[in-house]
Amino acid sequence: MSNAAEVIDLHKHYFLGGETVYALKGVSLEVPEGDFIAIMGSSGSGKSTLLNLLGALDRPTSGQYILGGRDVSQMSDDELSSVRNTKIGFIFQSYNLIQQYTVMENIAVPLHYRPGASGLTAADHTHCRDLALQVGLDGRLGHRPFQLSGGQQQRVAIARALVNNPQIILADEPTGNLDSSTGAEIMSMLRHLNEEGRTIIMVTHEPDVARQARRQIYMKDGVIAGTGVFPGH
Image (cartoon, rainbow, N blue to C red; front, side, top):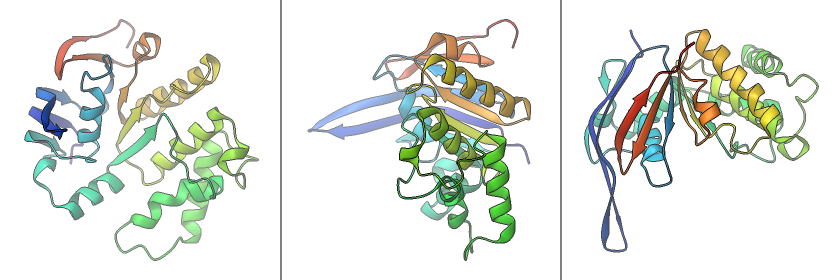
């Protein structure tokens, strides 16, 4: 089954302080399987709201979100949890690691939420170790987040995002807290994952980072204001 994604006339309203905030105002977007999209826009443009909806972290006020041929916007809470755990990997600007866990334990977190999970198997431990080595964390497997640099913590987050072998990676400002050299290393990893066939949807405010995606989506005031394709991708 295809893991293409599509949102159709997506609206999201919030009620804050007695007022209605219109975060998304009819967004439609097709994301073919294997695409690499950068979403840009100023604060309040709706880009983070869109990413949350694509990650099944929130529900739209109206409109449809089709993933792999199924309407995510109509799913039950249990179905949404399953989608988040099996189809989507998340990478956050702030890493979102559990401070008291080691590198290996952080990578393994999503495995505990698999349907019918009753602990980790020897194969799970091997898989987590392989991912840690793949993202360059050999020698750091027993370290905790406070013992790691920002770039190393983001590598842990990438390995964690991959542990359930999702086809879609959602990255929210993945280089935002990193220096330019470390950010370039993280982007190289994301490009490699895309070349392997994974779909990547990334929010960024950095034009140089956005240019490394296959497509750029520009959001303003809750709508898609423009799109672009850079040569060489």
